[in-house]
Length: 226
Ligand code: G3P
Image 1 (tube, helix red, strand yellow):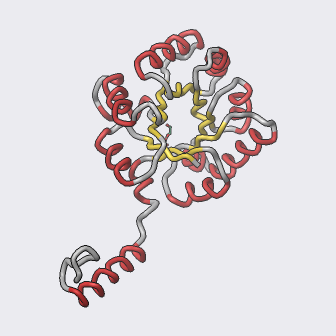
Image 2 (image 1 turned 135 degrees about the vertical axis):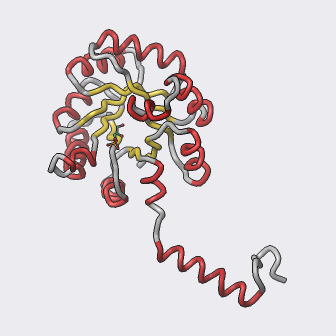
Image 3 (image 1 turned 90 degrees about the vertical axis):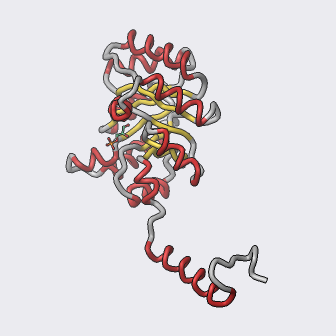
């Protein structure tokens, strides 16, 4: 499962990249709005930091296909290769996905809440289909089960589309989809950090340090314990 950062704050992106092996960054208009700066300025800053080998996902705002395609062209011009154009999975969005697939422009079908949206996005040639796991949970349904169903539909029908699961709020949601083998997941930096928060692990590491320091002295490591 690829792991992406669902944020546009460059400090948070840098901090995650510093420690973890991640595959790119996803954004949406609400995430960009939180930065309070011109969207292209923020997106170019992210692209410049992650380079062109990592994925950058950014979303169109138009609600009709022709304008979505125009936005996509401009976004690719500015942000370069390995940019995925996020398109809401509405009827006009499906049309835009078809048109962009014909031009070999990569798309991420987003705002997916139902299995047949995922099916139609895959039919339209989207590279990724992005279900909103936690938002589905909040509707009283089961976002994990839905996402597994999306994955089954895509696999059973031999589509090349991959699942890019989004909207996570906890480690368990991510673990279940990792175990199930979805193609990718994107999560906020806080959720990614949460994957490693474990008091037992921290206590075990601290005990090793205490025991070693009792033997060799405070601050000693394998570099200077002779
Ligand atoms: O990009 C869409 C998705 O990541 C939304 O996540 O946390 O706003 O539900 P969230």
